[in-house]
Length: 172
Image (cartoon, rainbow, N blue to C red; front, side, top):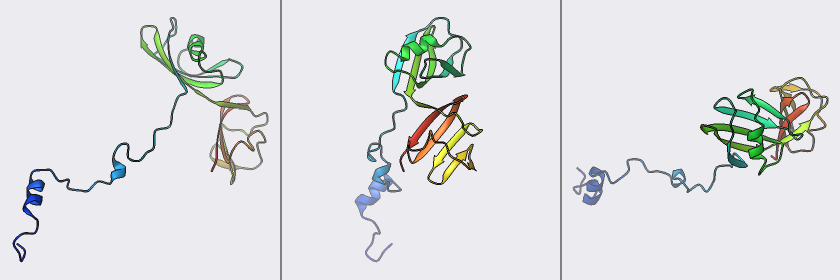
């Protein structure tokens, strides 16, 4: 007991014992909505389509500028009906992910992408062009890739097929 009787006032003790006081103060920026940042939009288009004859439960694919489809994951059957559903709102090129909802009903989401043809690309599946230089599959490489220069401060490219690359560019 302190010199004058109590360390804390009666209302503080009752609030603490009643569980009305948090043990640890919480910073206001940890609360939902306080930070002011929203989640980045992942998809540009979300569509549903009744598509009979497509096997499997999920599919991930890329539609190139010429309309051809590269299946990354999913059935060997034609995914053209799913691509047609996306193309009501979004023109190629794009990356899409489709999931069977029930029966022949599919939900498909797509995001616009940039496709660049790099004729003399270094061997490897990923390229990164930064102010520090060129990196191929994570390792520093010598040389340049003229098709990627001037697109941004940091340019990342992933090989889609042959000379076609999906490119993302950002500023520092």
